[in-house]
Image 1 (cartoon, rainbow over the protein chains, first blue to last red):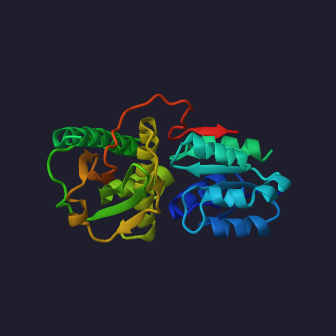
Image 2 (cartoon, helix red, strand yellow; image 1 turned 120 degrees about the vertical axis):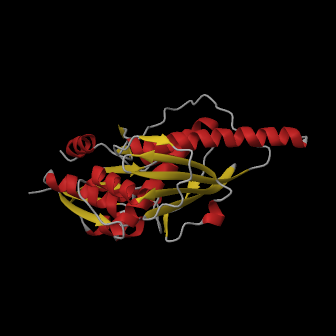
Amino acid sequence: MPKKVLIIDDSSSVRRQLSVALGNAGFVVLEAADGVDGADQIRAETDLALVICDVNMPRLSGLDMLERLQDEIARRQLPVVMLTTEGQPEAMTRAKKWGAKGWIVKPFKEQLLLGAVQKLTQ
Amino acid sequence: MSSSTANTLHGENFAVLDELLRDCCIELMADYGLPATQADVGLETATGVAVAAVDFSGRDVRGTIGLRMTSSVVLQTYRAALGRSIELDSPEAKDWSCELANQLIGRLKNKLRSYEVSFNVNSPRWLQIFPVAELERALRRRFICDGGNFSGYLDVLIAPGFVFVPRASDAPLAQEGDLVLF
């Protein structure tokens, strides 16, 4: 059964870029355009294998979403990888504290990303 | 502080930002397979352009970064990233222009960390009209690349007395393209 990955990013181009790469690798891909929609989908989709989440988004940032859902993410052992333009250690530390399993700085290298997704969804 | 000292600091601050803007623009396009060289001539008269901007604000700096690109730059970078073609007037091209501006401000923020400067970044916006008046006072770097050209703009206010001094960083910074697993 194909594993399900949720992409949360306000850029439709980035969502499409990730969606094509993950789809070609055999994953089923769901999309959300901000942290509010992303949180709703995380709660609703109980069989998610992984979440890839942007940081700066309208309505609710990726880090704020992570903080709100940290208990649920921990309980479900749901791997979350942050994908952003920024590489600030302070933000990475917060993401790690709230349960994220990885941090990718855009523009991402497709093979590197797929390798991490495969590893985290095993 | 005397006015001449203030003016010197002002000039040094903007020299730092100008250099960082140049590096960010070149690195951004190079990552999408578009090596660029700086141009001295005005490129603002070109038609078929996309302009996207991002506002940012922090304790020491606030302002707007802008990216103005001819159609070929938008279309070539999109093709490099997504492996397919789009039309310049499409929603995808507007979204991609915004994403490039978003990545430009991300690069600047990452570089400014070594000066202990940080700020919050707003969502990027696509501009239908080139905001001449808004960007006239901005730092501007123009570039030509294969088949087109682009310009980076940085309109910034710096807190009085603040000086950009590079400092040794105690924590490693993830660079563009890096993947860190916790």
